[in-house]
Image (tube, rainbow, N blue to C red; front, side):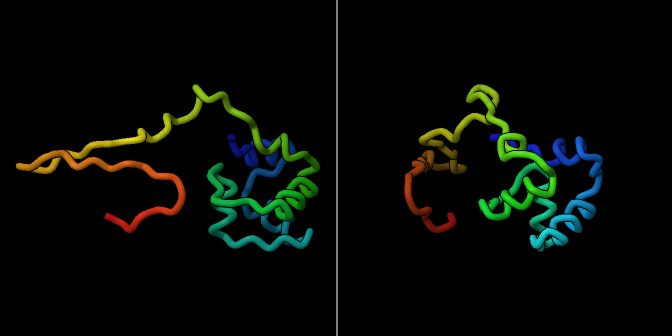
Length: 106
């Protein structure tokens, strides 16, 4: 999925993240500067459905306008199931990606 907030905002003549942030606050959705930066840059960490509803109301759009489906070939390649790293003077280290909880940092 591609997050399309900036394009939808531009179509409504909103050119600054701070302007949209103010409009969202007027509608009852107070967003921190950091989260607004993520939303505006196209890489939101999370978007709650309640927040999405207010964003759509303010921009007079639908979630389909904000979330654009990308074909699998257009996306970044998925991480390989197994990657190898060379250790100087040693044998390769194999890391396997597992589903579920992440492990401790290496």
